[in-house]
Length: 194
Image (cartoon, rainbow, N blue to C red; front, side, top):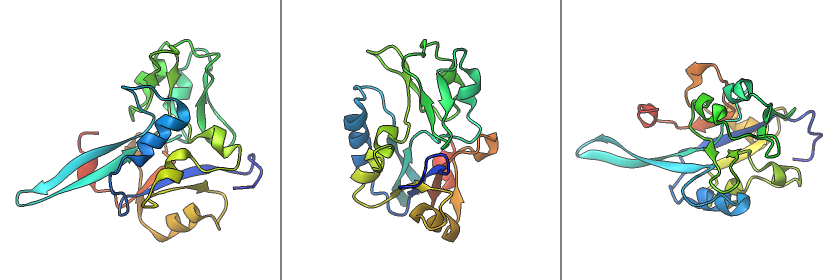
């Protein structure tokens, strides 16, 4: 991850064939980012799919998609939510007025009002770690290697290789937000209530 940030375009890939639903990602995210009880930057949705007697439990990790066309940026009346040159959507805590416009605009439900700071927060793929050349906390914590983070502009990156070799999907791709969190093995039944 050592290229100049102006040349990088970060992306996130979740290989659902590997996710075991252990919630290590959720715990690591909370610890790294000081996320209080009752709210989440990322979580793992657990869903039963199929019909009796062929029912199985499956998992859908969710986090901010850091969209190419993020509706949350356009609605912020004070410019507190903005997209960095590398594509990550961030919230400036010093500018945010907690109006919640961005919460309403996010079709993925990944923003929350921090109950103590009185500002809106969301997953930012651990920019504080990326800037130190580290992977996001949830990626580091995943024991199954189901979370892959990297530079979409680097054809030799692990994420670029996996995206080129596998069929991928994004959540609510039809909305035109162009999410940059991709899934391998996404069962459409997991998103029926999305």
